[in-house]
Amino acid sequence: MPNERMPGTIAVHGVEGARHPGDPLVPPLVQSSSFLGSGEGELLYTRYGNNPNQLQVAEKLAALEGTEAALVLGSGMGAIAMTCLATVQSGDHILASQDLYGATRQLFEHEFPSRGIETTMVDLSQPGGWERGLRANTRLLYLEIPANPTLRVYDPRVASAVAHEAGAVLAIDATFASPVNLQASQFGVDLIIHSATKYLGGHSDLIAGAVCGSRKAIEGIRGMMKLYGPSIDPHTAWLLNRGLRTLGLRVRQQNAQALELARWLEGRKGVRTVIYPGLPSHPDHRCAAEVLSGFGGMMAVVVAGGADGADRFTEALELALVAPSLGGVETLVSQPRLTSHVGLSEEDRARIGIPDGFVRLSIGVEDIEDLRQDLQRGLDAVIDGGSSTVV
Image 1 (cartoon, rainbow, N blue to C red):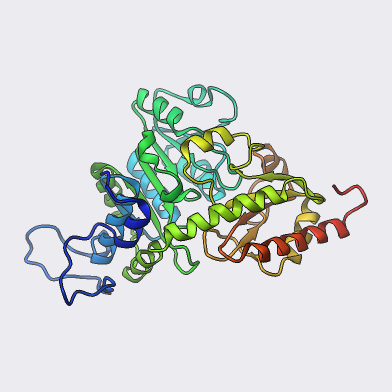
Image 2 (cartoon, helix red, strand yellow):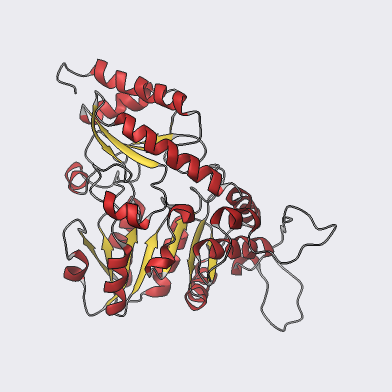
């Protein structure tokens, strides 16, 4: 449901009611699996996602996304899996963008077929991609905004129109955007998924997932969570709530630094391509400018020299850390060919825009001059280790 407060304020204060003298400023941790009850009303049990800490952070996330309800889970993949299983069943069809996180692709292509659920991956860079893939039994359209790791930004308004005309549900993974940069519910998105491990937590110290949507849809997903068990631990929920308090500050800083660094990197020796939605050279720049309120802290470069060049680049970095995650206060770099998309062949990676030499960067909140010097150090290693043809 819409909230009159701005996202930065909601992230700090949530939607708590009246406060009283003597109340703790910080919500207390309720580290309990069970709660006393009379046998009447809702059973309170942490595996059901209704521990006070779970409920507090879920209420805050729903307010941030402008939805009726939200549910926090034990991981981003847990949120994706439970959302899909609550939406489709054997005999149904999922229509998804081909630009997806590697584990999501594996779930769709290798796990769901054993449950009688078929997925078609479509190339949305071509007009009419959704319409061409649609079937009579399509029940779910699935999209990432921006996509991991290619940073494509496909129009959620188009996807919403196609989904709802077909009587299907539109779900998006908005992890890269966060609620600060994308208010997906305003564009007709039914279910908004986050790996809360990333920007929502923001400090690389927790694993969590979240899904936001209508109260009815969230209760269906909660039912799946009760059966499969990926509820979030109360302490992790408490940490997530703490991390959310600085979400606006962190994301706005990361937006600004990523945009400045992307502009600086473009055209530098040793760089083949800079991929960032905030650059006019990005294929989806116009759409990103329309649907995003910030272009995000995620970017990518394709360096000269292919895989060897990428190895030299990452090994020379001293401040940016090589690690397979994103969205924290520290700058992280990774090569999808070695991490999220290691299961794909070199040809398949290149086909979806991840050639060898592709390095994903999650820009942190360090001083930008230090980051600039560090990235130049990496590029110097690419140039020095390459041939005289490096540009």
